[in-house]
Amino acid sequence: MSFWNDPLKVAADWLMGIFTGWGMPELLAQVLIGFLGIFILVALLMVLDIALVWVERKVVARFQDRIGPNRLGPFGLIQPFADIVKLIIKEDTTPGGADKVVYNIAPMLSMMSVLILWAVVPLAPTILGVDLNIGVLYIIAAGAIGTLSIIMAGWSSNNKFALIGAFRQVAVMVSFEIPMLATLLIPTILAGSMGTSAIVEGQTIWYFLLSPLGALIFLIAAIAELGRAPFDMAEGESELVSGYNIEYSGMKFGMFYAGELLHAFTFGGFWAIMFFGGYRFFGLEKVSPFLAIAIILFKAFIGYWIIMWVKYTLMRIRIDHMLSFNWKFLTPLAFVLLMVTALMNTLLAGTPTWLYIAGMFLSNILVGWGALEIARSYSRREREKVERPKPVVETAHH
Amino acid sequence: MTPDQIVFLIVAFVTLGSGLMVVTTRNLVHAALWLVATLFGVAVTYALLNANFLAIVQVVVYIGAIAILFIFAVMLTRRDMRDQGPQVNKNWWFGALLAVATFGGLFFLLQGWNGMSKTAPTYPVSFDAISELGNALTSPAGYVLPFEVASVLLVTALVGAVYIAFNRK
Image 1 (cartoon, rainbow over the protein chains, first blue to last red):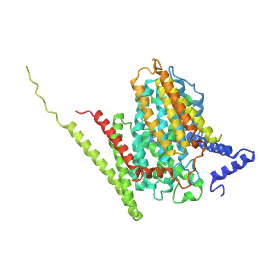
Image 2 (cartoon, chains in turn purple, brown):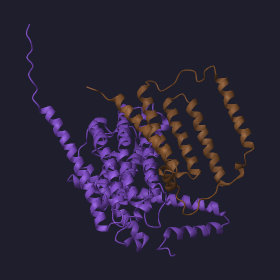
Image 3 (cartoon, chains in turn cyan, green):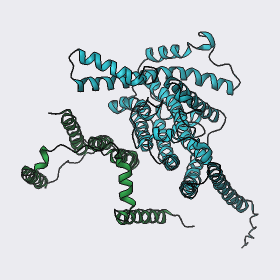
Image 4 (cartoon, chains in turn blue, green):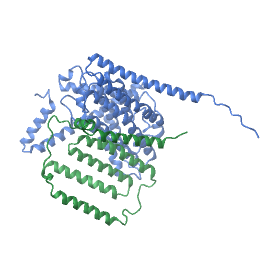
């Protein structure tokens, strides 16, 4: 077992040797190594987060036909560091009448709800925080903590705009959790496990081919969960100025902002893990775990890029439209798709691979087509009802 | 004391302390947030008992749905978040007596129980608690009937709620 095959275990064994050599009890050394591992992962993620600020700004600029940050360093690469310096030396303000403790906990909780997601991200076959057998549910639970942080921020700021933003965002998150959970159960059915690493290991065929509609619904629900456009009514600059984080200044705002970017990147990663084979890429992941990490980061960046693409292309939807879209269209569709997937998966078990893929793919297309047809005929009927000329009522003259 | 016991004691004190804060704090939103801390402590206790699924479901259902609903209800219905009235009524001594008696009774009963000194059996390597739970809930030899009855009850409640809220034109 060399460092290049299983770096995590070799490093842990090496540290264990050093710590026990100092006369430390084995249990304490284990706890210490665990904490060190978490610390290193979080530190690397925060460094990645700094890079994401630059990536996001550059990509937005491209979509909007601008240049983006280009003054500091080559391609404006030093810009995010300047931003950080600015955020740190800014005055830390607390609005009058704010609930100080809750106000200060909220940004930490927001960042934490994103960072804990990485405990179940399988970076390589041997590099994984915990191999939870309920990884899929864990993702939803982390989202619940994110929801809590937003409502805490909105309420404790003692600001009406912040509170309205928080209400909207929580309404979005609570309702889009349901189609997201339903679509997360599709890889669970296909892999026969809720663990993220088992789902990746099960994808000899990318689940995107077996459930393209599931992948699409997951992406929509993820964008809503992130509160990004077209579901960004929580921030709604033109209506609420900035929504739930309006009163936060300096690095506290930075925590929300950095948390949002990392959250988007993380969901790009989960999209890749659930539907695009995670770290698997034509057997390349077996060559070296470092190559596997590069593959999953690449796929996560593609997912992140698509999320940005949607954000900077589409306009904001009205909140009532968005909620009825979720409850009347996306949620029933996700549940029907879940049932169809479970049924087809059982019926097609034991058939040749090409037939299995074709059957699953076609059943998805059929479900999607049927749902769109129903939605279309419904909207046509509604439109006819509105367009029908109203009979002119003769008013009686007295 | 083993590390497990130390962790358990810390979690138990935090859970109980937060539970006490829920009923003593005068700020209603704070009470709801302390309730979240209490529920989270219960989730950690489940995790310590190797019941991962229950721990996560506790967070998803109680913190993600019920506590958020509580906070919403408090924010939308109260103009003043501070509760001004007295915190105990005149029956407080009877409640305290009942609590002490229950604690004493449990303490007395558990004195003679030999489960305290036992260590929990470890799972075999291939044991998958979540699939065991799934099989138990859906096999006719297991708990399929209670599971289905509970599902029917929930669907009935859902249909009832929709019926009450439905705005007939």
